[in-house]
Length: 228
Image 1 (spheres, helix red, strand yellow):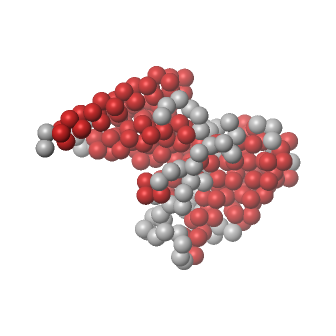
Image 2 (cartoon, rainbow, N blue to C red):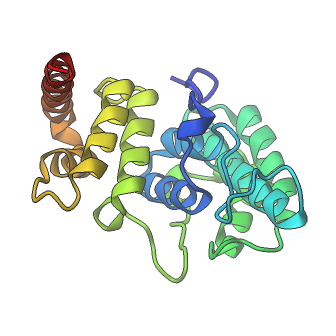
Image 3 (cartoon, one colour):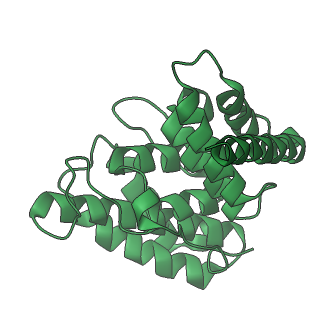
């Protein structure tokens, strides 16, 4: 599957905050899941951290340029790994242009990302995706172990959208149920979401379990609603 084939995030009302999207995408990129990272960063326009839409003011536009540049970098890296050199160079040019105009990187260490995009733009045949930089945010390198629950849900859903095992809609529901579990002493959905991210070899089995748990929870809620 190429990055042209992947579906976009569907409902803008369900879009994560800018900080969650950037962190989830960084963890995916750092794990070598470039297409899923692109899916997160290049989804529908997301609300800014202060509640703005990104349509007005310099700061929201700057955040949009940051996500567009990161998305183009991830897409270029994916295309280069697929042997699509012209496509990689094209998307890398977009990344270079977008990232050059970012004045507030939201904690992202952009120097290595810009250098990588420039390498992909000028000589994609010499840019091995295995040497792609690890993205750092606020002096940390996001990975699946350290994600917040919100970012874990975004990352897991993105993986399913680009072809990893599992139904994306079931993963969206599982993330919502996991949020509702907080403070109840139950951690079933959260544990399965993180297991989905952390154990790629077991993703088919974990995805199946998540789907079963989501169906069971949905039936339980329908039964309760039917009582009233």
